[in-house]
Structure formats: structure tokens, C-alpha cells
Image (spheres, rainbow, N blue to C red):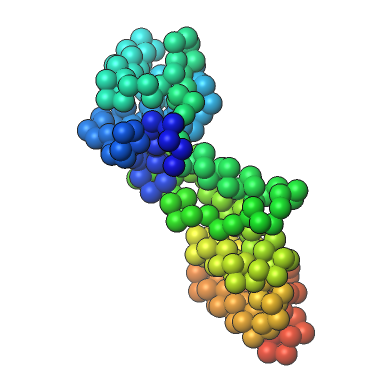
Length: 244
């Protein structure tokens, strides 16, 4: 952990605000309105006070929404001094605050960068695998939750493909399984898993992965895999029955 960091905010698998100096400890008893303010500043870059008030208190008249924002800021500055940097109209977290969603974004960008060295491509740590703010139903949270989910899924598939191409098949299989576990009905994740098995020469595992996906898709949705998926196992012996 960066020794200059004062706060760490976790939004994956739930909201937690921790002070990291002088020793890690949660900042407790934050009202839900204050938590929502912190989460919003984690997810959006330097929003104006008007934008924050409108998003967090959409049903309130403008004056009341701004009053609620001022109250939330006062409570936050009392509980976590130095967390927010916003002397002007824009609000932002202080530069040294660490946020797990931003760390996830950095990992995903490295995974998706075709110029990144393979030794910089890795599985995401367990702390970065959860859903964004589960149980929160604000419109802005729902939109960001889906964006984060899609970004991570594409990155997992990219990690699996790149590791398989570099003959790191064990880690490639793990990355593909993480994608499948996160979204069991996502065909591109299952295609990635099948491709990794084929890259390693495990034809039986590839066919088995296809058959499991085909059965699950039939049971859950009553549909068959796409031609793009079926083509991967066509002509692989036992795969002929699976693809028929």
C-alpha cells in the first residue's frame, strides 16, 4: 500500500471507507447520504455541485438538494478530513485517495492494451472481482455497475486469450473460468474457455466445455449456441455429436 495514501474506498461487494494512516481502520457510522456522495465522487470525475445535488437528491427541489449536499459534505469532512478536494464549484476526492474501482479500471486497461507486455497481464486480485455496490438501486449506480461489469468481462476474456497465446495455459484457463463464473450465460466467455483448451491441446476438455454450455443454454433459455461457438468444436471427433 502506498504509504502516502490516507484513505482507501471500496465499492466492490459493498461500501467501505478506510483510513490508512497511521493504521488501516474503517471510518464508521457514515449516513447513507454521505456514502452515496463518496461513491459518486469515486465514479465520476470532478462533477459540479449542481450535478451532484441533482443526481443524489433527484426528487428534491434544487434549493433543498443543495442544502442536503452541503450537509453531507459537512458530515464527511468531519468524519474523514481531507478526503474531498473541492474549494470551487467542482468536487473531487483528494489525489492520494485509493479506490478499488479505479484499480479495477487500471487492471482492465492493461489487460486490453495490445501493446502491454504479457508479464504485465494477470488475473485480477480477489478484491477486484465483486459487483459494484450490490443492493444500491440509484440509476447512476445501475448504469455504472453494468459498465464496470462489461469492462471486467472483456478484460478477463482478453487476459485468457493473451495468456494462452503466450503458452501460460494454466492461468489462461483460470481467467476464462472467472469470466464464465461471473456470467454463466455469456457465450463469448465460453468460447474463450473452449479456445484456451484447444490451444493447450485438450480436445476432450474443449468439447466438454461446449457441451456443458449447450445444455445450460438449452435449460435456461431454450436456445442453441451460435454458429460461431459451434464451429469451434466441429470436426473434433466427439465434437461432431456435440455440434450436430
